[in-house]
Amino acid sequence: MRKLALFYFVYFSFVSCQEVEQLPAAINYVNLNDATASQAKSFSIDIDQDGDTEFLFTTVLAADATGDLRQFVISPARENQVFEIAGRVGVLEAGQEIAPGNPFDKNVQPMVVKRISNTATSWSGDWKDAGNRFVGIRFKLNDQGYHYGWIRVSFDKEAERMVIHDFAYRTTVDSKIAAGLK
Ligand SMILES: [Ca+2]
Image 1 (tube, rainbow, N blue to C red):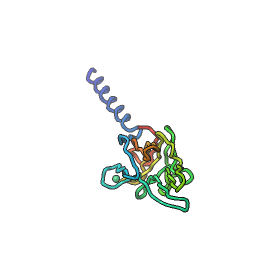
Image 2 (image 1 turned 90 degrees about the vertical axis):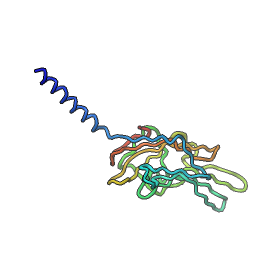
Image 3 (image 1 turned 180 degrees about the vertical axis):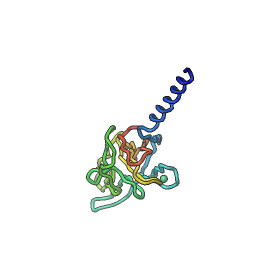
Image 4 (image 1 turned 90 degrees about the horizontal axis):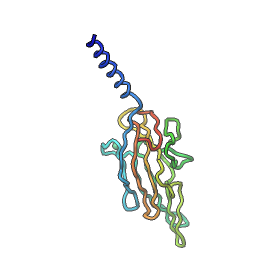
Protein backbone atom coordinates (compact mmCIF):
# COMPACT_ATOMS: atom_id res chain seq x y z
CA MET A 1 0.00 0.00 0.00
CA ARG A 2 2.81 2.32 0.88
CA LYS A 3 4.54 1.47 -2.38
CA LEU A 4 1.40 2.27 -4.29
CA ALA A 5 1.07 5.65 -2.62
CA LEU A 6 4.65 6.45 -3.46
CA PHE A 7 4.01 5.43 -7.05
CA TYR A 8 1.09 7.81 -7.34
CA PHE A 9 3.07 10.59 -5.75
CA VAL A 10 5.95 10.17 -8.21
CA TYR A 11 3.60 9.72 -11.16
CA PHE A 12 1.54 12.83 -10.50
CA SER A 13 4.61 14.91 -9.73
CA PHE A 14 5.97 13.90 -13.10
CA VAL A 15 2.73 14.76 -14.91
CA SER A 16 2.44 18.18 -13.29
CA CYS A 17 6.09 19.02 -14.13
CA GLN A 18 5.38 18.25 -17.76
CA GLU A 19 2.41 20.57 -17.80
CA VAL A 20 4.42 23.39 -16.30
CA GLU A 21 7.06 23.03 -18.99
CA GLN A 22 4.58 23.22 -21.84
CA LEU A 23 3.21 26.66 -21.06
CA PRO A 24 3.55 29.49 -21.45
CA ALA A 25 5.79 29.76 -24.52
CA ALA A 26 9.38 30.45 -23.48
CA ILE A 27 11.11 33.79 -23.92
CA ASN A 28 14.76 34.36 -24.81
CA TYR A 29 16.13 37.55 -23.23
CA VAL A 30 19.45 39.18 -24.18
CA ASN A 31 21.01 42.13 -22.37
CA LEU A 32 22.99 44.26 -24.84
CA ASN A 33 24.52 46.41 -22.09
CA ASP A 34 23.47 49.71 -23.67
CA ALA A 35 25.12 49.20 -27.04
CA THR A 36 25.19 52.31 -29.22
CA ALA A 37 24.78 53.16 -32.89
CA SER A 38 25.98 56.49 -34.26
CA GLN A 39 27.49 57.99 -37.37
CA ALA A 40 30.81 56.52 -36.27
CA LYS A 41 29.56 52.96 -35.90
CA SER A 42 26.57 50.81 -36.64
CA PHE A 43 25.23 48.11 -34.35
CA SER A 44 23.89 44.80 -35.58
CA ILE A 45 21.83 42.18 -33.79
CA ASP A 46 22.49 38.59 -34.84
CA ILE A 47 19.80 36.89 -32.81
CA ASP A 48 20.75 33.27 -33.47
CA GLN A 49 24.48 34.07 -33.74
CA ASP A 50 24.88 32.38 -37.12
CA GLY A 51 26.87 35.26 -38.64
CA ASP A 52 23.87 36.83 -40.42
CA THR A 53 22.42 40.03 -38.99
CA GLU A 54 18.68 40.12 -38.27
CA PHE A 55 18.39 43.85 -37.43
CA LEU A 56 20.88 46.66 -38.08
CA PHE A 57 20.91 50.07 -36.36
CA THR A 58 22.82 52.55 -38.48
CA THR A 59 22.90 56.08 -39.91
CA VAL A 60 22.29 57.11 -43.49
CA LEU A 61 23.38 60.46 -44.85
CA ALA A 62 21.16 62.26 -47.32
CA ALA A 63 20.62 65.81 -48.55
CA ASP A 64 17.85 67.94 -49.90
CA ALA A 65 17.49 71.58 -50.95
CA THR A 66 17.55 72.78 -47.35
CA GLY A 67 20.68 70.98 -46.22
CA ASP A 68 22.11 67.69 -45.03
CA LEU A 69 20.11 65.00 -43.30
CA ARG A 70 21.57 62.50 -40.88
CA GLN A 71 19.06 59.70 -40.59
CA PHE A 72 19.09 57.19 -37.74
CA VAL A 73 17.47 54.01 -38.99
CA ILE A 74 16.68 50.42 -38.12
CA SER A 75 17.18 48.13 -41.08
CA PRO A 76 15.58 44.67 -40.86
CA ALA A 77 17.37 42.02 -42.94
CA ARG A 78 15.70 39.54 -45.31
CA GLU A 79 12.05 38.89 -44.36
CA ASN A 80 12.38 40.49 -40.93
CA GLN A 81 10.11 43.41 -40.06
CA VAL A 82 9.31 46.02 -37.42
CA PHE A 83 5.97 47.06 -35.89
CA GLU A 84 4.97 50.04 -38.01
CA ILE A 85 2.48 52.85 -37.53
CA ALA A 86 1.75 54.83 -40.70
CA GLY A 87 5.05 53.80 -42.28
CA ARG A 88 7.09 54.73 -39.21
CA VAL A 89 8.67 52.62 -36.48
CA GLY A 90 6.08 52.40 -33.71
CA VAL A 91 7.25 53.85 -30.37
CA LEU A 92 5.78 51.19 -28.11
CA GLU A 93 5.15 51.47 -24.38
CA ALA A 94 5.88 48.63 -21.95
CA GLY A 95 3.09 46.09 -21.98
CA GLN A 96 1.88 46.82 -25.49
CA GLU A 97 1.09 43.64 -27.38
CA ILE A 98 3.30 42.60 -30.30
CA ALA A 99 1.41 39.90 -32.13
CA PRO A 100 0.42 38.31 -35.43
CA GLY A 101 -2.20 40.62 -36.94
CA ASN A 102 -0.38 43.81 -35.98
CA PRO A 103 1.01 45.90 -38.86
CA PHE A 104 4.64 45.08 -39.65
CA ASP A 105 6.88 46.32 -42.44
CA LYS A 106 10.48 46.14 -43.55
CA ASN A 107 10.69 49.54 -45.21
CA VAL A 108 10.02 52.21 -42.61
CA GLN A 109 10.90 55.87 -42.15
CA PRO A 110 14.06 56.84 -40.19
CA MET A 111 13.56 56.78 -36.42
CA VAL A 112 15.31 60.14 -35.99
CA VAL A 113 16.51 62.76 -38.49
CA LYS A 114 19.00 65.53 -37.80
CA ARG A 115 18.72 68.29 -40.35
CA ILE A 116 21.75 70.51 -40.74
CA SER A 117 21.51 73.65 -42.83
CA ASN A 118 23.79 76.68 -43.05
CA THR A 119 21.67 78.50 -40.53
CA ALA A 120 20.22 75.92 -38.16
CA THR A 121 20.10 72.39 -36.84
CA SER A 122 16.83 70.66 -36.12
CA TRP A 123 15.63 67.23 -35.04
CA SER A 124 12.61 65.28 -36.21
CA GLY A 125 11.28 61.72 -36.10
CA ASP A 126 9.11 59.87 -33.60
CA TRP A 127 12.11 58.56 -31.66
CA LYS A 128 13.98 61.84 -31.12
CA ASP A 129 12.89 62.11 -27.46
CA ALA A 130 12.40 58.41 -26.78
CA GLY A 131 13.69 56.96 -23.52
CA ASN A 132 13.29 53.24 -22.90
CA ARG A 133 10.68 52.61 -25.55
CA PHE A 134 10.19 49.41 -27.54
CA VAL A 135 10.60 48.53 -31.20
CA GLY A 136 8.26 45.64 -31.95
CA ILE A 137 9.95 43.07 -34.16
CA ARG A 138 9.24 39.85 -35.95
CA PHE A 139 11.83 37.73 -37.66
CA LYS A 140 12.42 34.34 -39.23
CA LEU A 141 15.24 32.00 -38.24
CA ASN A 142 15.60 28.54 -39.71
CA ASP A 143 12.01 27.55 -39.10
CA GLN A 144 8.61 28.36 -40.56
CA GLY A 145 6.74 31.35 -39.23
CA TYR A 146 7.76 34.50 -37.39
CA HIS A 147 9.20 34.93 -33.93
CA TYR A 148 7.74 37.99 -32.17
CA GLY A 149 9.81 40.18 -29.87
CA TRP A 150 10.94 43.62 -28.84
CA ILE A 151 14.10 45.75 -28.69
CA ARG A 152 14.35 48.44 -25.99
CA VAL A 153 15.83 51.65 -27.39
CA SER A 154 16.58 55.19 -26.22
CA PHE A 155 17.77 58.13 -28.28
CA ASP A 156 20.63 60.22 -26.89
CA LYS A 157 20.37 63.56 -28.67
CA GLU A 158 23.34 65.02 -26.81
CA ALA A 159 25.70 62.29 -28.01
CA GLU A 160 23.81 61.86 -31.30
CA ARG A 161 23.37 58.13 -30.96
CA MET A 162 20.85 55.39 -30.50
CA VAL A 163 21.19 53.30 -27.33
CA ILE A 164 20.10 49.70 -27.73
CA HIS A 165 19.53 48.29 -24.24
CA ASP A 166 18.24 44.75 -24.64
CA PHE A 167 15.82 42.54 -26.52
CA ALA A 168 13.63 39.48 -26.03
CA TYR A 169 11.50 37.20 -28.17
CA ARG A 170 9.28 34.15 -28.05
CA THR A 171 11.13 30.95 -28.87
CA THR A 172 7.90 29.56 -30.35
CA VAL A 173 6.82 31.00 -33.70
CA ASP A 174 3.50 32.82 -34.17
CA SER A 175 3.29 33.56 -30.43
CA LYS A 176 2.58 37.10 -29.20
CA ILE A 177 4.66 38.91 -26.60
CA ALA A 178 4.16 42.06 -24.52
CA ALA A 179 6.73 44.86 -24.97
CA GLY A 180 9.26 44.59 -22.12
CA LEU A 181 8.27 41.08 -21.06
CA LYS A 182 11.31 38.90 -20.37
CA1 LIG B 1 21.31 35.54 -37.49
